[in-house]
Image 1 (cartoon, rainbow, N blue to C red):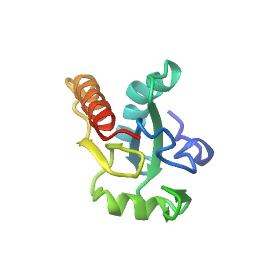
Image 2: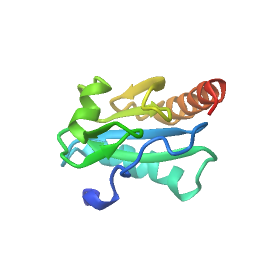
Image 3: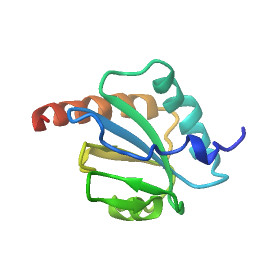
Length: 133
């Protein structure tokens, strides 16, 4: 499988939807497990989008600039560091201000990943709704 081109990775602005979530795949180049998470689990979410859910990707060693709120600009690496990402793949569930809304999914457990993803999305959406705009 080809590696995702940098132009299709993380959007330049996170948290555009004040009651939504951003699911961020923190990945590394040439990571087969990252590709599997992207292709098998996250691309289908993009193909049939869920309401208030944005899917993005950031390289843990990336240098692209990310805008995360009106006064917060960081690199992909800085974002990974802030989220305490130490392993790829890690899927994080972030709110409009970059806050964690549900525990991340670290690694790939093929037997249960889909169930973990569904559960974390539901938990993150509930947390975002409680937080409000």
